[in-house]
Image 1 (spheres, helix red, strand yellow):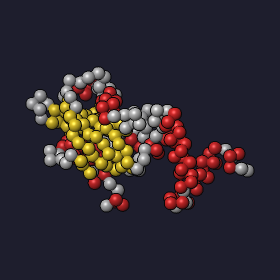
Image 2: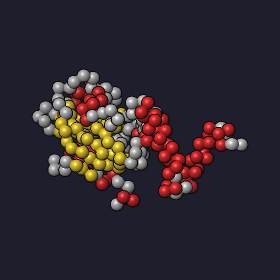
Image 3: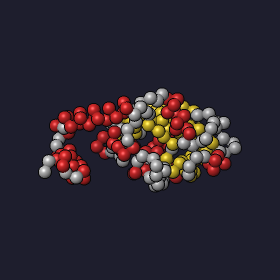
Image 4: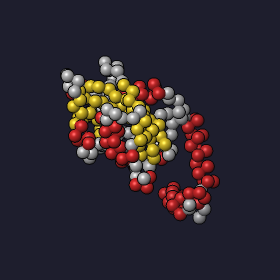
Length: 216
């Protein structure tokens, strides 16, 4: 039976096994065909990829925007941070049921303002009275997505009473819970929030704590 006469699951298994067995340096021809198919789809769809393969096509280094929501009391003292529960509709099965700082990947037609505004809309409908503060950029590794992420980091200061007014399901975490790597928080956010908490943080933070051992 010819390959294209096989049922789709069997075709998938054959192609997957080919990539498992063949050294990476010897798969240029099929990878080029895949890249051409991806490029044609993105050109026809304003840069978007199908949700089913979104994570697989992120590339070795993704560029994204992230907003941390720092909770302070009336005197301006930091109490901790509010994080949003990942929804089932969001890409990334490994992150479902975990809390995170709102974050979005850059799209082909984005600039920093449009990406930041889209990320901000995940938290608040309309404008919040407290402006966003640009903190710098972090570089971290994401094991579930098997890539690196360069993230433009922003902070918004909110009060405890704001949490109940925000879009989606939110939860407050204290500094101590974050430093103890609370299991309900996406792992890379532990290191990003610790970078935020560091008053001497560098403008470009390389978060080695997220790196796998193979990267030293």
